[in-house]
Figure 1 (cartoon, rainbow, N blue to C red):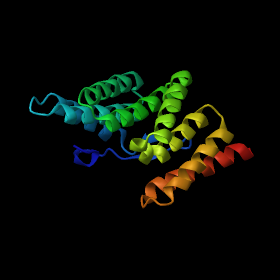
Figure 2 (cartoon, rainbow, N blue to C red):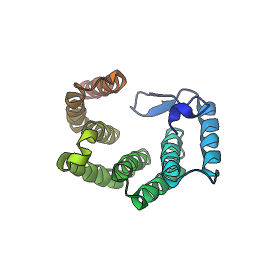
Figure 3 (cartoon, one colour):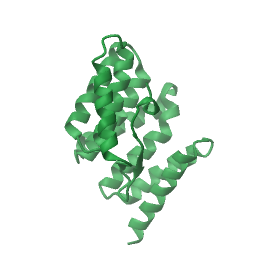
Figure 4 (cartoon, rainbow, N blue to C red):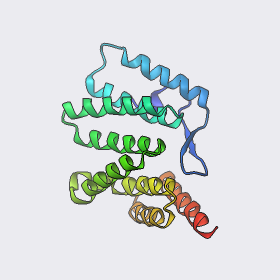
Length: 186
């Protein structure tokens, strides 16, 4: 299951603080109820359950339910660890680091992002995630008002994304750079 398979509006945009905001919060809540219902289906395989827990954790963070977000993301990580899906563990650890960031637990988010960065920079199995990690570490630093450092990470992300055809990703990074530059100039 992917987010597009959910029969509700799960889209989001980025606010002035570079955090995701639901386009339609009520519909996103209904979508999360739909996902929760899917988890109760006995016929769903464990890996699919892990994917659903990961999506739930992400959407819960977006609507501000941070404790439940952590719980769902940890369940996803446990499921993927048990099945040996290392990249899925990595992705959900990045999501979990974001949730700690939103919770203003920067000791934990900084530690997690440092570990994820080290893995992405030193293990070729994870190098495809470098631009994501740079961008998310930039947002983590932005939330801590470390705008110079954040800007460096956003620029690193954009440099890697230039070969990427995903215009939305490039635009979100350009917006992050613009927002960071405005903060530095004020």
